[in-house]
Image (cartoon, rainbow, N blue to C red; front, side, top):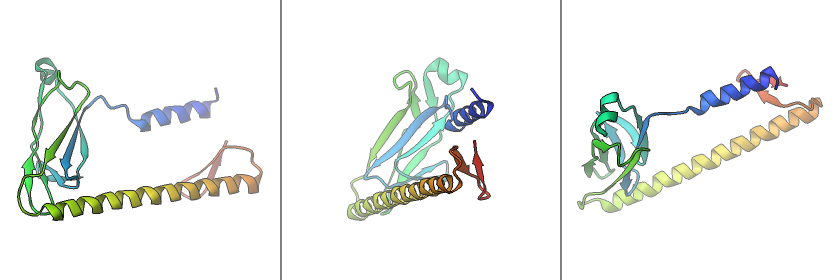
Length: 161
């Protein structure tokens, strides 16, 4: 195996990030509520955060996290659990909160649809960008008859091997 191939494989392994943390997914129904943890906005639900259990958490099988709250666009709010059973859910956990039965449900459901639409548009734009990049690389390879694998660098130059 070539040195370049080994470096590329190592880079992929590092960037893929082997996480040994404990994943907690904060979800809501309807989705799209802001997830606020310890005063910091973590995004619209569902939100997945990684925590690192310490030795005592592993020994007792219980881990306590910061308090996280779901706040829907109407102002409705609920708190997520902050104590997790590592023995019952060793690979992480997903908690879904039902919106409280207060006024403003239609506003929150509408906002959830808007969030899903924005996420769909983002995926479409990323796919179009990826296709354009692949076409650009194929064009470069054909025009330069390199017959090599080429990657465009941040500065616009090409790295071929």
